[in-house]
Image 1 (cartoon, rainbow over the protein chains, first blue to last red):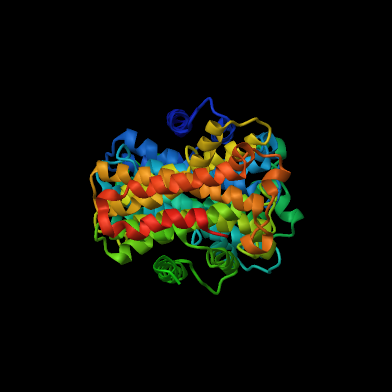
Image 2: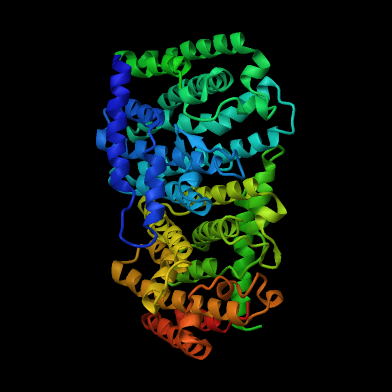
Length: 295
Length: 295
């Protein structure tokens, strides 16, 4: 196991413990909701966003307990987006991270509510004094996450994606779509540590630049997996983009150029971190990891 | 028109203007999402929750521009909950406030996203410095709303309601269900003004007590409308509870006792406001209004 893999596994374990503690557990009839929240939150996954938060926070010596709460919050938002995207009215997916999707395991109504509840809980966690002693920092985290996840960010990107099925997208439009749909939440993850560490805007901009290239590299890699991977290996349905006739980086650039572009973006992402020196070593490796992953 | 009706109409106009300004409008493909958010947010309704926020804030001389932003936030959460509750997987309702429901007017995927986006935007609005100059106040608003709307509040209540179809509920269980499903959000609305006005906990408790009785009275009145109203008059499908064989206050208490109970709760609610004197006159009238409304 490389250093990066070991560090990611360690963060995953820690963030899992925080998620377990934050999701309610009761003897009441609505406990089924909490089970569904827990089922989808604990379905594995690489915990990439939490890792970005924790590594970003480490650059500025932020207490790990604070970073892990922010990490749990963004993972809740990511999980909610997967639950809702998988619904029959959206991607109608049966499989996610190798397990039945939330609405398959429970039912559609419970899945809608589990997504809603995870989104809501994320904001509750960020606004709580345990996440940071300074309420201005907590407000900044909430405001930035609401922007990244909302109508002008992830939800807008998902809507754009729905509309895109009837459109001819060029590379600029696909880049914009992916920045909204996945890039903004990745950017929040990269920036959260700087917010927690009360860093000046120039530092936040560096991390945004890193996140921008990383997010695009990540999405191109995702398109490559959808085009080339097997369901067993990727842990979710594949080939759906081509089936839906959707334009992706791969359908426009072709496999070879898409791969080269992802690699170039990963290198470029790493270079934005130069000023952080050795402290950013794992974040640089993450950029390489996202384009070389096989799931 | 009574004073109360005029005051409610005035608040509704003001909060509508704030909502209009807060919901994005673009020339991009995802504008359909913003249209859906606007469609459901602007579908009329009494704006009861915003009115409670504005009247609560007026008790403590909070700037109206701040109160209206908090009012818009809770109306966004209320609207999101209606959009998701109306989905085919939940209540499968075609009509809401006399107009096609969001998924009927647009489509199911857009409706899911419009709900998600409104919920997210609510937290963005509350965390913004324009809502209050003190970030601790903004964090308190966010934390309290996340609790009221989330797994241990409204979403939990909605899940309980789904489970209740297969259960025999007694009056205690129905009271708990309704406190979660509708009461918590009404309580946030009543308390928000005290949070904005940095009031001590005893004052918040008074408003919570008022909200508790008001919320229950409101729900009993809702059950009465479902049992007795016509679709045309109420603006949504009626008789659904009986059809679904669901226990309600009306099915357990009968119409006469339910009506008496609602009236008693309204009187009790008003009395919690004694210490606020004349300033709370309209809030006292609201308690009467919710049990006497015909829609």
